[in-house]
Image (cartoon, helix red, strand yellow):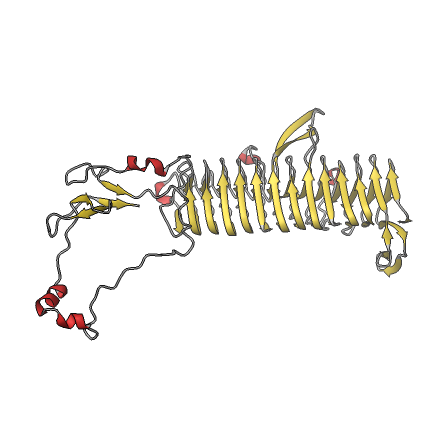
Length: 544
């Protein structure tokens, strides 16, 4: 079934192509090539100069078990519209492809491929689910839209691929549901993969990208964003329950390649292996309770998280989680060329509950900063604590933050290895003003043996400016004169000096410590020694 022409609109109607293909194309000028194919006709839009607008509105629906393809300049699905593709016993996997040259907008609508249906959930369907492919410079998912490729049976679920060179945005306006992109498995089949290629990815208002595991293993989520990934906020998902009442579930924006549901009794949790998550982007921000997770709330292990970025910022309870209830915590690897900054109750965690083992955390960055009440943890309850490895040039940890790899069993504690220029770095967050005009308050009059060592200090407080950057080379403008005498190059004056004077110059004199001070004729303070006591130890010290 092919609908080809100018601008197209499907309103309150449905197109059904069970066991066949459906294609909708909008071309204002140009031509479409018709190509023969084993599964029917295919259409080539290469010679179409001007594509048009296509919209599905007011619960308009396309049902097919074959290929569904929609192509135009802009494609809009809104007000409960949908495209569904089911793989049943006698069907081969179909696909859903939406390609737009300008923008793709999915608002309060559904794209769904699935192995089996709830009405035949007990049937063992081995066929794989259909893939979903979305292509446009700008792609927007809003107000409870759902993009889903799942399996209810033995066959593996389909994959979801999103290619948007400029923007991908998931959000839900006030009072509306968050938007979801999901691959999942409720049967024995494995869940599909999700791949997002874009310039900027924005996720807000509780919107999620998830690869959920059931009895089968969950899929992997891969994100390649050439500019930035920004994840923030929470939202409320409102859906009817079994009694027909409207229930509310709080969702946090972010990625989830997890198995099970937090809070569900352990015996009811599925047993599938969690998927993994890979993010490649120059700038990654996770804030306002948003999170990325590969946790497992059942018996199996958590998945892995790998982040390759330039700057990673976690703020206001932002989280990166690879926790497990009973298995092994997943591994978290972060490579950030410039910085990793945690602030305001944020965390990176591979903690294990029950008898599970904590996972491993590896962070490589130029600067790691934990500002206020943050934690990096690979803790365990009864199992082994994990291993944390941090390789950084600058480590700044506020006293309210922590880095731990502990276990309730002291024999099973994990390890924390930090490779940095300064192992004792602490970031002082209290605001203090030090003026050079009151520097005399830092100078003490007494400096003698037997007095309080905290008072016996000379202090050079400088001018109260910003200290040198410890990562830059030191510029030393002072020089030390060479006081040695070259015996092969003596001056005429040297030859006229008595031998006794030359001998005195070469004698090794003991160094006497300063025990008092005077103001010389130029008004400069000089430290002097009234006696030369060899071997005496002084508690006076210079503080710069």
